[in-house]
Each structure stands twice: as C-alpha cells, then as structure tokens.
Image (cartoon, rainbow, N blue to C red):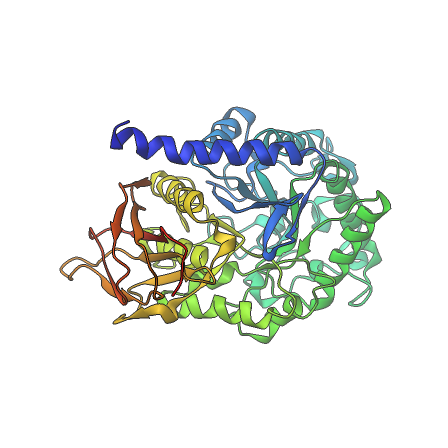
Length: 486
C-alpha cells in the first residue's frame, strides 16, 4: 500500500470501527461521563470523543436538501457532534417561528407552527442515523433583542413574544416594552427574569414552559442529545437553575436521565460567574467553556487547565461547542487561531470540540475537515482519554511554541507544534523521556492536510529534540516500542 493510500485508509478504518461500536450501543444508551475517565463522554462503556464543526448554529432550521449534505460532510470528516440553538431569528430568510401566525399577522402562542417542529424532528432523526450527537441550547439571548445592526427590529417588528406581535397578552400584563435596543449582555430583557425565584412572571412563563415541553416531546425520544440552557448568558443564576431542574424533572417523569449545563458569557474562566456551573455538579452534569476561545496562546491553555484543576475532585466532561477563529471576522481572530484553539483543547482534555459557524469560525470548511481528520488519526494511535496535559515535559519552549500530553508512564506522548509565522525558524523543543530500554516510534501528522506520514524509530534519548518538519500545524505522536523500564 502506498503512502498516499495509507493517508486515507488509516483514519477511515479507525472511524468505521468507532462507528460500529458506538452504533451498537446508540439505540439503547445515551451519553454519560466515561466510567474510567469522567472528563470524557461514553456511550455505554465505550468512550466517545466528540469532534465537529457546522456552518450554522441552528441547523434544524435548514431545508432538508441543504441539511443532509452538511451532516454527510461532517461524518465524512470524522465529525460526530453539532450545536443546535433552538433559535428562530430570521437571518437567512428561510427560518420560521415555533408559533402559528394568524390571518391578522399576529401569532397565537397557544398554537404551534407545524413546520418549525417538523424541521426539529428531521434534525434529530437524521443526526441519530449518522451517530452525530446534538448539543441543544434552549434559549439564545440574541433572539430577543433589537441591538443587531443587521436586524434592528428583531424583537420589535418580528418576534412572537412581543405583545404587539401576539394575541395572548398585553404590554402591561407581560411587563415587556416594544423595543430592547441594548446589547443582550446588559441583561435588561424581562424575558430572562420570569422564573419563580426571580420576578415570577406567570403570564410569560407559561408560554416558555409550553415551548420547552414541546421541545422535550421531540428530543426525549432520542438518546444522542445534550442540553445547554443558554447561549453565552449574563442572566441571573436562578434563570438557568430553574430550567435545568425543569428539564431534568420532565425527563425523570419519563424514566430518563439527561445531561444539562449552562454557558456563561465571561471570557475569563476564572470569573466567579462560571462557578455557578462549576460548584453545582448535582445540577450541571458537564461544563461548557466555549468562551475560553476568545483567548489565545498560553493563556488559552492555562485557563482550561485552571478549570480542570478546579473540578478535579468531581471531574466532569468539559465541552467547547464554539471554537472561534476565521480570517476577517469582527473579533479579529484568524483561521490559525481556530486551529490552535482546537488542538490546545484536544491535548488539554476537552470532551467535545466544535468549530463555530462562519464568519466567527471555520464551520466545516476544508481547514476544519483536515483538522478533524488529523485529530482522528491521533486518536487512532493514542486514545485521548489515556492522556493528561504534560507541558512540564517540554524544555527550551517559547510562548505558544508547543503543547504536550502524555500517559502516566510516559510511553505515549503527543506534542502539538502550531504553524510557524512567516520569516521565523521552524519550531524546535526538547521533550523529557523516561529512562527505558528499547526504542521509541515517532509519527508526524500534518494537521493542515489531515494526513499522517510514515513512522520512524529512534533511540530513547532524553531530552528528545522535537523539530517541526514543516512551517504548518503538526503533531508528533511518540510511543515506546518496548514497555520495560529500568
């Protein structure tokens, strides 16, 4: 078999084997923390690394003829997770609201729009067929604002919950006003204050409950779903707590258990707000640290490790469903930023990593596809749940030059070297190895192409020099051939 054939055969074989084992479990068991390493997910007792990317955050709204090719592209890359906000904002023109629109142009919050819910059902069905896991976000604060420059009347002119757009309640009864021009991060929208421990707004809460009930009517029939209450929220803790308990109670009534979390807005994972999730493992079964992806370099790595240390007494899966970074976006993050963030989180121990939608992320473009394929190549050689972050093994390392992970006895190691900036020398670091007999095997994976190279055997010299073979993004896979230790 030629090297070119090997490049594709190995990852595809690994992916096919994984799908076979996962598919056998999938129909009967849902995602749970892995019993042997609860930083990761498992189906039954089969560990599952969730990797993905998609070109929108609410794929369920897509027409089926557009949705299916997107899902197939994700699977072909080795992807197995998407994000799905229940969002109804009409930013592409084909999105619909969940409520029935009457002949007078207003909505009736007591009647459903069948098209919205059929689309949701289709997404759940088609992802289940493909063993693609779905992380649902129930509420997205950007649906209930007029602050978007590209859609300034989103709440005022369009949204069914606005009293002037429905037949169910008035401004006085609901406590709403006609416009909310502030950025939703200001948390001035009363929509997010309705629960009993807040303003106890039963007029609006009853319709929010009906919506969640309808969502669960569909999603609880499937086992491949995770639940996140909000998208990057600044809401009071009581808001998320209420909906987490509500969803869990509804599931329990059907003798089912679901995994729930909340996603906070703070970019600094050390901020007190994040501890509303960290400190309540009985309520929040996993944590989403997506906002760490606004950080770069060593700070990005260290923030993630801070959370791992903080949660170490009760480890839980750490998901990062929004990996930011794309050339030319408003955050001034680059394609390279996205790739680096993906790989830092991978080696640091994230349970789920997904590229954010364009133009804030790579989505499932060619770079994202290559990145996911490269990650599956690494997983095929070293299961990520066998590793721990191990930058302490690196010597002569500059800021953001290399990131390492290793198993306990240092017989399996991975070192990620980010792309070298133009005009700079190729990255080179030293790696401390244990004193051993026998040899080590080094295998380079080209992340930018999603391919591997042939393996080379080396003498167990410590420290071992790890020199990048190219100026692109690469990972070195280093494994002991013999297991004896002096």
